Image 1: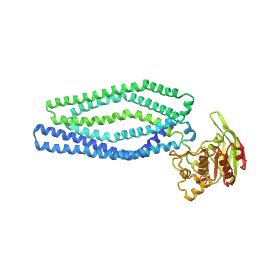
Image 2 (image 1 turned 60 degrees about the vertical axis):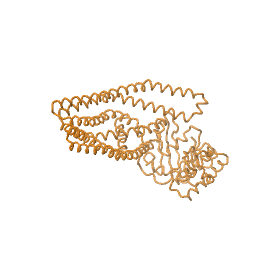
Image 3 (image 1 turned 180 degrees about the horizontal axis):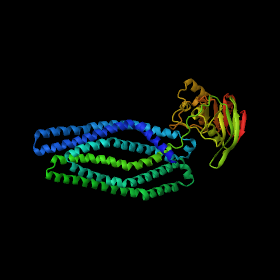
Image 4 (image 1 turned 45 degrees about the vertical axis):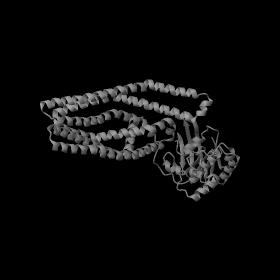
Length: 534
């Protein structure tokens, strides 16, 4: 991917996250600011209480204790309530973000979408957007809240003792040592783990689609052995090292944290012995140190997760790369189709060469040919899913390469030979995409497609499955429901029994619209006004 294109995709990824998660960002920021302020004020009250206790000043101790309880109540009650609201916003924003990312994949060009691996895309869709938006939120909340927290801490800590404050800051900075040292290695382990999960998901998806074939070929054990081998390789290269790495890094961090706390107490004791600060100041400084540690942890999070963010952007780019062209000329409403010397192929294999034909309003065209001669490819070209390498396809005088594809496709209705069926009844599947269809219109289409008697039959839930012919009729009914100027039938006689085939022949004879029938069935070809052979 070229650098300008990479920056453009990165901008789209950022924009989608920002537009869907900004409410959560605001609530999280407010919650963090409130928590930081409450913690610093709690440390102030704790220091005042310690001084009052050592000075045996009952009234001052009671006042400090009351303030301490109020700040603790804010931390214990108000902050969790706001966090609950932020979680609600997070859920709502996450749903919108997932839909936005998924819609980006829907916008991919046909060729690009067909190149993607189903298992890998599924795994990336399940995990990567979740991690990305979480990192995005935490990083931006830190950028918004850390300046306020550091300024408030600097004011309160220097008020105790500038020298003691500098010592505390220096010790707190040691907590960044381990995160800064491990961040690149952590990003490497994260990338390797995600790549392994994607590869495994792809294998599993492939396995679930052809389990019986693998058993018939005697490959089941070999397939399981392959998965085991890939796991052992991942364990040897990544998982074992990551486990040791996490344990060592965690232990080192805990050691530096404990040592820093003890040193703050020791330095505070020396300042108290000199008489430059009081005992309460040490207690307050310990509280400030806790808040400062959390703030610096947020800062270290930025350094650690930014490399992971870049890796996630590279992985999520699969949803944004090679989008289908948007916008263009309006092709007008009608079905006058002109194909002029189009050429198309996949890789180095040419399927269509210098193909030309003309189709006028109300005409029927048969496209015949053996399997592999480019009949399905022609449908993809006519629908704008693929772009011809040479030649021109025009509808109502508008070239497909210049047309607004969404408007172009409104002039087309395609009855696919393998229709996608959703959960529901036959009628629900016919209505799919035409939810505005009236009951009278639906009944008319069901009758025309020969589906009236099974309109309420469910296509799932363990009932007797639909036959191939019934699925074919559903596909035809969907095409009819679009009321498009041009209807394209893709191998409509496949899966039909003798009675269904006779019904289809009768339907084609009586159809008065513009029609393209792609089929290897000679009987269907004879019904049309024109025939081209591929």
